[in-house]
Length: 297
Image (tube, rainbow, N blue to C red; front, side):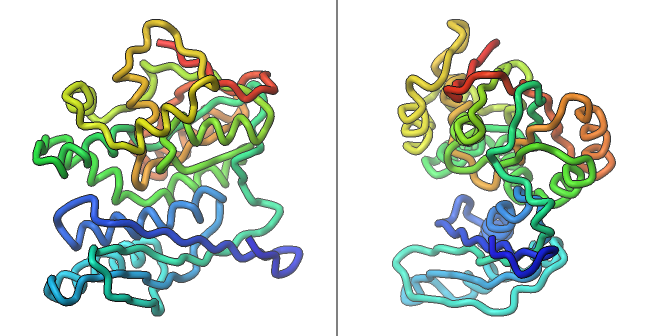
C-alpha cells in the first residue's frame, strides 16, 4: 500500500499460477478472481490490472492463450475494471495472473492483524478446493465437486468486501495457499489473540471428505498442517481427514472476517443482500497472546 495523500492510498498486488482446470477460459477467470482477492481483502476497490502470462508457444496453439486472456478480461470486466496491458514470456508450462492496482482511504484499510477478543469469525466460501483440484489432476474427477469448486474459485470477493466495509470490521484476510488454519493463524499471531472455531460450522464442498480419504490431498496442504504443529489445540474428535481439510491449500478462496459481535447480524444481512451465498459464522476470537487456535467439533 502506498499513501498518495491523507485520503487516498494505492494498493497493489500480483499473483499468478499454473492451470487448476482444463478449460483455458475458466482458468483465466479463476486466475483473475484470485488476483483481485487481495485488493478486496483490504477493503479496497480495484482500479485497473495488467496481465502476466507464461506460455509454451512452441507446443500449444496461441488460441489457448487467447482463451485464457479472454477469461481474465471478462472477470476483470465483472469487477468493473479494464486490463490495460501486461507482459508475456515463453515458458514450458502455462502460467497466468494479474497485477492489480486498487484505491482506498488510508483510514478505512482493513488489515489481517486487527482482530480483537470477542469478535466473531465469518467465512464467505467453502473449503475443499485444493483437494478437489488434486483429484481432478490425478484423473479422479467428481463432477459435482468440480463444478462447485469452479464456482467458488471464479466468484469475486468484491460483494463480500463491500458488505464488510459498509458494516465496519476489525480484520480480514482471504483464504488461499496457507488454508483456513494458516491464514487464521496469521490473524491471531499478528493481533496477539487466539481463536476458537467449530468444525461443524465450517462449510465444505460436498465430496471433499471422500476424496481426502482416498488420498487426493495436495502437498501444500500437508505442508500447511506440519507448519501449524504446536499452534493448534485439537479436540480429540477431530479426525486426520478433517484436519487436512481445515489446512487445505485453497485457490481463490473466500474472505475470513473478524467482526465485532454486536455487528455480526448486520454483516450477515449485508452479505445476504450483496448476494454472497456462503456466510458462515465459524467461531470467535479469544484472549490468548500466544495466537493459538482451538478446533472444536
